Image 1: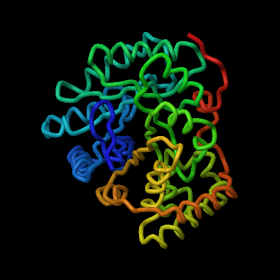
Image 2: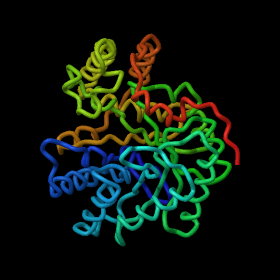
Image 3: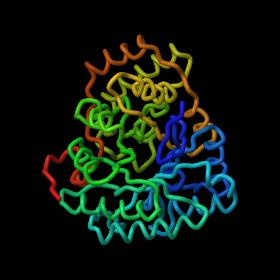
Image 4: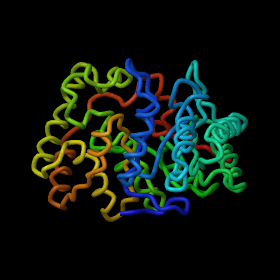
Length: 339
């Protein structure tokens, strides 16, 4: 299945670039990164999701990786739809939604991606509680009107912000966490607002930071950046692992892997009445995982009903983020923003 985003066709599963630039004991070589991007594109995942802050610095990130990739494979530049997050300061990491910094961040992104790449979508990485967030949407939109970027997207926002933003600019996508491990957007009005406004959702962490692959038996098995998150600590890990065991069971019935079941659950969810388009954007740092994640499995109504019944009784233990990061989660904020 394909969708049209900013006038371009994209497949119904994308590819997240964050994992390629995460700090590792054994860093992924540039050539291997190219091989994985190429494999994703060859398998149909032409929606690429990256960030100005996905890397070692604001000058070494998804954009510089894509610039280098397109220098080697210029024929791929017109095949992709690229979404970029910016608007965060590093060392220490903090959110800056001011119009001045938004403009600075966009200019940096445009300069880093080079002449061959095109930023199709750009969004502020988080939303502060100040009115400047909505003011900065107009800054982003000014770059759309100039033809420098393709469209405005949002991330980690609640339904109220989505509706407010849509009155100010044309919102072409909303990037939020949605998965079997995080179903809040199905119940808090986010999916409802996106469906009503015909805004697609780009579902990041569709595998719960690797948890839903079924390969993580203890917190230490997770990538070090994730294992300290509250929901992977102590008793929370054990309580949440009940979901993983159930996903393994469902996957076995379908003859697929837990990762494939989890991603295809989102695709099936997208087909339900009243739901928006949902495009999972799983990341992966190996060819095997990329190909696994892009394999599609048809889930029946009976399969979905069985999942519904379990999720109705299951509650995730522990928060998604560290306590100090929750101040930037718009879903926790009910402040009315005006402009």
